[in-house]
Length: 320
Image 1 (cartoon, rainbow, N blue to C red):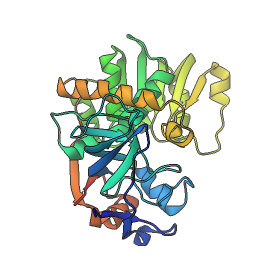
Image 2 (cartoon, rainbow, N blue to C red):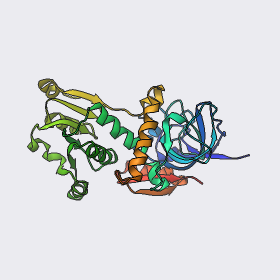
Image 3 (cartoon, rainbow, N blue to C red):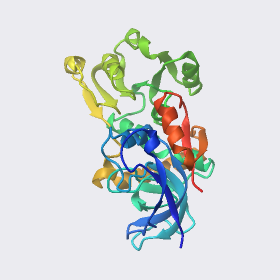
C-alpha cells in the first residue's frame, strides 16, 4: 500500500509545531483528481494559518495552498484531465480541503490547469496564488488599456505578476518598491518605479491603484488615486481612516482569492485563468519568478526564515 507522508501542525503555534505524519491515502470524488504532489509552494498565508492568525486551517492541518504534480487518478465526472497530466493550481490549505505539503492530495479539477512546460516544477508550484490574486485584483479594478495604474509593492510576488498582466492589457503602469535595487528590477519590467515614500509627490494622478501591503500603504494608495478612481487592496485587515476615499468618491475593493476554496463558488474561474497563464508563460509573455527548492522536511526552517524577514524570494518544497 502506498504511503502518504505529509507535514502538519497538530496545534497552532510557532514553526516548531510542524511535524511529519502519515496521512490517509485520499480517494478522489467525482469532480476531483488524485495528484502525486511534486512540489508544494510556500506562501505567507501558510505561516498565518499555522500560527492561528487566520483560523481557516485545512481539515488535516497540513499547510500549503499551491501545488504542482502529476495526475494519477481521475474522478468519474472530470473532463479535460487524464492520468499522467502534469497540473498546477491553488487547491487547498484551507478549511474543506487538504493542504498540499503531502505526497498525495485529491483536488477539485475546476481549480487546476495543465502546468506550463517551460518552467520548473518549483516555479509552477509558486505561481497560482500570487497570479490569481493579481488577476482578480485587476478584474476588480476593471482595468482597461490606457488606464493609469499604480502598484504599491510592485517587487513582491503579487506585484510583479500584476505588472506583467497589466502591461499585457495595455495599461500604463507605475510601481513602488522599498529599495533602489528593487526599483531597478521594476524598471527592467518596463515600468516607472519610485520608493514607497515618494507616492505623495506623484500627486493624485492614477485612476486605478493596487495596494499589496495594507496599513500605511493602503492610505497612500487612497492619496494617489484620482477622484472617481478605483483602489484594490489584498490586505484590508485593519482599521482605516477612509476620509480620502469619501472625499474623492473612490471605489474600494478588498481582494481575498481563497474565497472560492472556502465557499465553493467561482472555482472554475481559477482553472480557466491558470490555463491562460500557462499559455502566456510558455509563449514568453509572462515570466515566472525563480524559486528556491527546499526539501519538505525543511518546512519549519522556511517558516522561521519568513517570520524573521529573511525570505525575499519564492520557495517550493519538493516532495519525496
